Image (cartoon, rainbow, N blue to C red):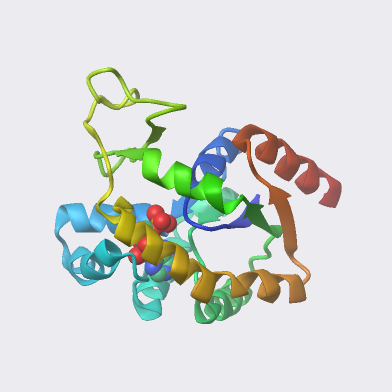
Length: 217
Ligand code: AMP
């Protein structure tokens, strides 16, 4: 499958993307995961991106496009990809459209995850993430806790609260989403690619996405 996942922070894009990769050989591409790994490693990209991320601001489009232009041409994308957290602005969406057309790649559709605001806020404040940059498994202190010792059930690394999940950063991320990312819903509606799902349960959403994919083939 070749899809984009749109949705506010905390809408469940990462969880839905991970579940979808279990059904075929498509890879999950999360720009957030790529950037957090770079920050942890302290490399050039991480140094540039870290300051924006900590505040809950978006990383500049040019930096994101450099990453994605390279990433989408890697061999593992040949079997399909699930874009999680990209594009996040209209310029990114326009550049992605040009890039895919240059590469001769056609998107199946764009998934818009709709989740009520109170659910989003609750999820973001109770979310925890595996600190291992190559794992980044997502947990929730209420519904899906790590081990009693606070370790990742997959890789055993410590599970932490992300720097950008303080109350102030969360507020900024939601405001940034409304201002910069929500306009993508109209953009993809115009392109005839949008399919919205009320997404309270990730499993139900995944089934809905698969049904929609099957109906288009
Ligand atoms: P996420 O894990 O998708 O919530 O992303 C975490 C942070 O990484 C965001 O708050 C942004 O600072 C940055 N980021 C991730 N994806 C993008 C993108 N496509 N454009 C700009 N910044 C991004």
